[in-house]
Length: 95
Image 1: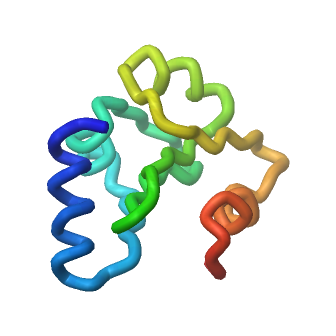
Image 2: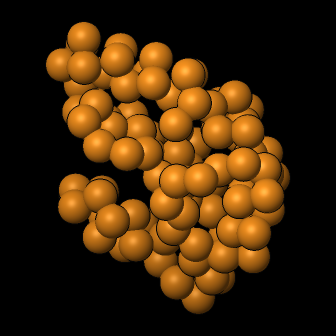
């Protein structure tokens, strides 16, 4: 995990927050190194105070995220799948 993500996790812990879900392409790039313009599709970075972060992006962009250096888990989804359901299952939270 990179220093920026670690810093955000430390902030979450210090402020007694469980998680942050970022959907801004610029913020995701800043924290992950992966830039995407998903054209109205969900792009998100889930960061947790006490768990590893993961990225949510269209399935066709998963190889690009890995090539950009993201080495954490990635939830890829197709246009016929519900990315929010996949996110809920991965994070075990209600969204």
